[in-house]
Amino acid sequence: MTYEQNIAGSTVGSGPPLSIVAKKRGLSLDEYHCLIGVSDTVRCLKEFIAVQSTHLQPALIIGERGLRQEQIARALHDASDHSDRPFLAVNARRLSGETLHELLFGAHGVIETLHHGTIYVNDLAGLPSMSQQRFAAYFEEQRWPGRKGHASSQRLIFATEVTAGARTAENRLAYGLIELLRSNTFTIRPLRERSEDIPYLASHLAGQIAKKLNRGPCELTPEALRLLMDYHWERNIDELEAVIEGAIASIPPQQLDESRLPPRIRHAMLRTIPAEGVSLPEIVDNFERNLIETALRQTGGSQTKASRLLGLRVQTLNMKLKRFAEAPSSRTVTSDE
Image (cartoon, rainbow, N blue to C red):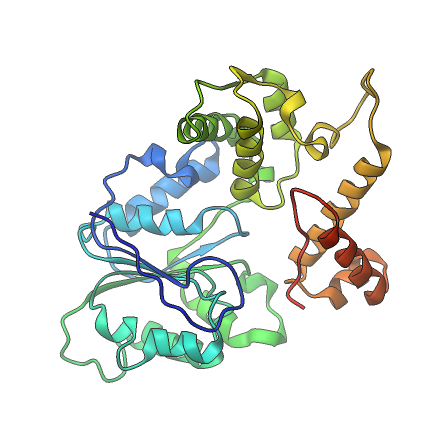
């Protein structure tokens, strides 16, 4: 039996701040989107999970958002001998610093009360400094202050978008934590760098979505798959799933061909102009959105730094962001500022 528990608090992001899976999920590996594909990344990820599931040392997953890091953590938990213990996922992006620290380390927090099971934290580098210090103490001493005498089979799994190699002076403690976890770390490559996985993943997602929407079998045509493989997926599996679901939801097709894909994908690698013509403003607009999304992702959502990369004034970038937010689109460009 599976149940989820949500805890309200000061929020700064999306998604539930806390979710718990109390029993083994009983899913086959193919049900984990993060494990579908034929690339070296997928093969090595399966090996990483197999090795990590044999012990309870803390683990770290490095990669961009949208790569289903929580699924990786759940697969690791389910592959272990402790799969019948609780799995708890903490959405660190949704809670304010004090609320998050209390949730983790308070007298009734999850670290103090969940002695058996897996705790997954989705943003190691974004944790408040006081929480990072407490985790650093654990990594170095392999125990929590004040918890002597407690028998524990607690497992910690973290995710982050940054690497120790990208060290800056802004968050030295976080990079220190990443370095401490080096021996139990896996870096998952973005989807655009392993296009060989896309046909398998897209077909699998199409089957799942068609079933969820009560549609018949849906096959992607070779041309549609080629366009999906050529596209630069900024939001990785999350974006791919949204595109396929949008296409299947709009019609009940037996085949999903290129005409059902959004213009930004159909025209991303435009080599010839189709007979029906194209919308140049729409193509230019989508290209501009992609560049801004890329710059914001690379700079952690900083409009100041992104504007420098793009050769724009901050005010100009801010105006473009507002225009994109107001314009009808299947995507929304956002930043942390």
